[in-house]
Length: 270
Image 1 (cartoon, rainbow, N blue to C red):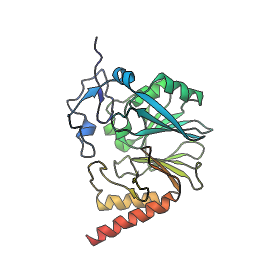
Image 2 (image 1 turned 90 degrees about the horizontal axis):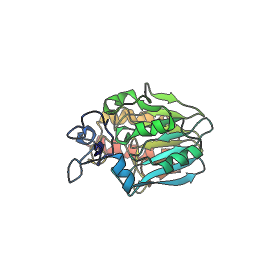
Image 3 (image 1 turned 180 degrees about the horizontal axis):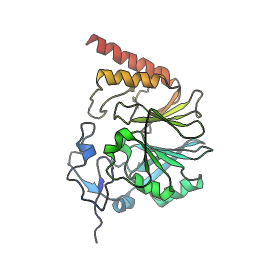
Image 4 (image 1 turned 120 degrees about the vertical axis):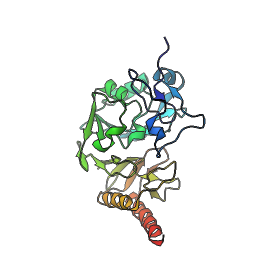
């Protein structure tokens, strides 16, 4: 019997196998996303496990980067944070193999999974079931959870304390529920795991906040200002973004401040 194909090849979102699969992925149909040139295509976990692996790389003794190889869908990474009070997986990957499960268990398992935004939800229910842990998603993005599971917890407000001084900060912008994970360690003034909530440029001299990054759609001016003011209230000097080249380990807040000032000056001119 052929297994149903329920994972979108463009974004990696996994839909419930026991419900009708949409003709088009709602996430990729949105203005913030796109479809591949060949249009809507689907795969499943069984097929992905035959052709893809997860590469695990140590960024420092308390932080590991997980990434699918060869690249699949959006090509994002997940970040595994080791912390005395419990480990956290930030964002997710649409592949989970036994080698990765064994590695994470060797580091103490997971106490929680948390997300930056809906583009990275992928097959979160499989990850949550494997590690028997809650999944924290901001309530503002509940409409984008198309495969809800018993481990998902929708949180409210601007900030959710976890443990060891770690917090999830709702920023908005890219999505209403777009969030950051603030880790007080890893750098002198704290580190932010940002996913696509804040987007570090290739030259690492600029940080953007946009409605859509791949489609180059800016935020409305009032929302841009609200996001900027929200981030300015957070103490940090390092950023780990959603992709492997987005490690900004020094002076990150000053770079953010300079970047948004440049944007605001441009808006005033217009």
